[in-house]
Image (tube, rainbow over all chains, first blue to last red; front, side, top):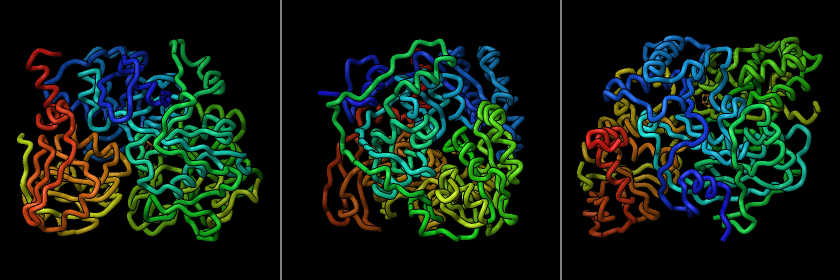
Length: 426
Length: 172
Ligand code: SF4
């Protein structure tokens, strides 16, 4: 009987010939790194101190990155972000993490952009991290699983327990319309299957649309997969992925692929050419509607960024829409590149200049407005964002409303001062 | 920790988001929970009086996709702090499931629980035996217990105390 890519990666990680849904396994990471953010690192160090632990399972495998809010003086827990980084750095050094494994702001970004760029999350491997959106790595055929509260214990043990999920196949056929992005495909699926549509299962995205899609689009879909209750999201890797990693790692990796006769809990097929730009309507993360149903809703703020977007393609499409134009005078449009690398590349392409000329605010690479940093929403503001979630208070004041859409939709809306369909600008 | 509990049932619905329904995100982000007592905030967006009404040992019965959204563990910690002995759900979000075991919050996944239990019922649950007795209706429900090693982690109080045990035993 055939196996899915998720089952094959988990079997490989656990050193077993094969595994099946429902099996409980114990395994760690083998060839690459465990990435610890300096904000969560500071909490981990406190936990280590409380427990009297004084070792990592393998300090050479620990990477420290100033992710999440690396550039924001966050006062939560009375510790600013720079202070968190200092605490984490000293803690890591004292436990034997090599100096070269500790990154600082020139390498900053949201946590899930970094491992893809640095070659830590590789096809066929497992990527573990203490943040919800690890499944992002599925975009390059790597199994991303969130450690959440178990990160300190994982750093000590070197392994964690996992349950093998069933997989659901999403076959997206045809060709997307210009202005319809990976983001829209995911939200469309969420609208179809609902927020409990893939509880504890893996979403495997396939079909012509996914094959044609850029890595940026695939990463965005996988990043968001958790909003259907899924454990993770993944795409079978292809030449685009291997080309991407060619210059990024010397580590040997073994990509895994779903067998043609793999067993799925369900298979859904959707015609990609019929998918419209999608909007998540507040206050719930689960209300998905086509853009036409909310077109014209006035906005005060727009945001492109977070681990769900803020990649080259996202900034590029915004620049295409805004080139030679000015955003609406009543709108503050924050565009935050997801990483220093994206910022550099898009700057070289002239994208950053185009966005600045249009009146956007460009922030240093980080999570930025997604969890309410940099330019948090004021009372009663209405925002359209391409970030991950819109739970009340997520991006600032609780009374502010957050609509979610693709970067193209966000850019078109910033231009008009109201929610707009990006297709007319492309 | 024993793996048997008895308590009064509180019922909540489907798709409870850790940041929206279980522990309000904004208040946490504003530092209002700096004291580490998330229990005072549990379920307040749904029922502001809940933390005051709930008694030690009470049981939460919820619908599908319990604890969805982000993997924030404050939800699991808060439920435990509020005195809830056990959460029974039709299904769990993966992050919530994992965090519960790793933080020592007893959980049971049982499809059909909502049809068999209503608010105010008294339940007796036995995690090892895989049995829920509804003392009020005198009905007994069966479920598949978690594998032994997970029950061991849970009853140690979570993955950290469990790791401590391995260290003490010289196993790591
Ligand atoms: S961008 Fe948002 S969702 Fe992603 S890691 Fe940062 S805070 Fe979390």
